[in-house]
Image 1 (cartoon, rainbow, N blue to C red):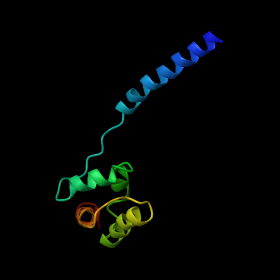
Image 2 (image 1 turned 90 degrees about the horizontal axis):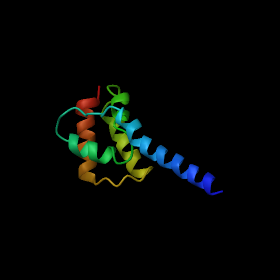
Image 3 (image 1 turned 45 degrees about the vertical axis):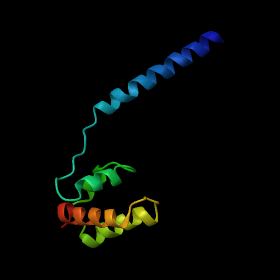
Image 4 (image 1 turned 135 degrees about the vertical axis):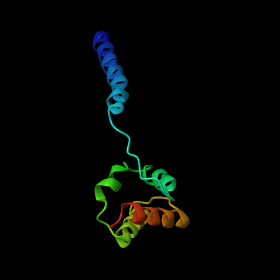
Length: 98
């Protein structure tokens, strides 16, 4: 019984140690520089990967980005202030829109 518990503890420890190494191979998503980039990165990355922005662009027009930001706030409960929401929408429309 003690041997099984010790083996399980060692296995769990090894998995925890391996997790950061697995993440180290992932590349960092960098948003295009511009007004609103910092607030966009800070607010959006708080809940999901920034690759969603890159995957969805350059297709959305401003109205689509506005709808997406509003969905994050109203449906998913993102705590984004109005001024930050406007900055995010402006940034996305200018840098990741059609």
